[in-house]
Length: 136
Image (cartoon, rainbow, N blue to C red; front, side, top):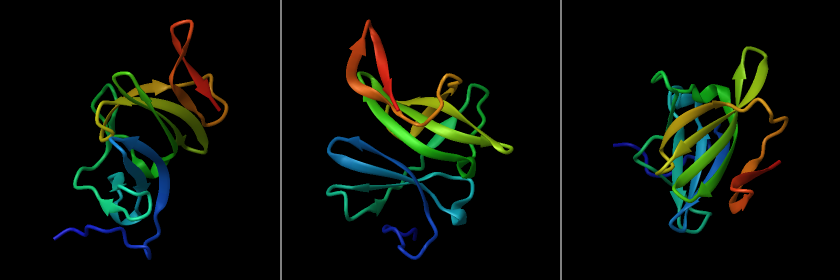
C-alpha cells in the first residue's frame, strides 16, 4: 500500500505550491520516484497528505518533462485554469517554460519563455490592456 504521508527523512526538492478549493498543493521531486513529480495536499498548510494523482507536464509532441530538470514552480490561477512558469535545465543552461492546467495535475507545456530573466508568476485576476501581467 502506498504511503499517505510525506516522510520527513527523505531528501525532497520542493518545486512550488498552488491553491485550489482552499487546499494547498505542494509540488516536489523525490529521487526515489525519478520519473514523476509528486504532489501532496493540505487543508491547513501544515499537515500534508500524498495525493494519489501524479502531476505531469506533457509537451506538444507528447513527451513528459523530466522532473529532475525542473525547479522554481510559480503557479497562478487564471479564469479558466492555472498557468505554471518554471525553470528547466538543458545541459549547463537554464531557461523558462510555461504550462497550462485545468486541474493542477495534467499540464500542457506551452513552450519556452525567452523574454524572462528571472522566475516570477502571472498576477492572477489582473489584466492590463486585455493581457495578463507577469511579476518577477
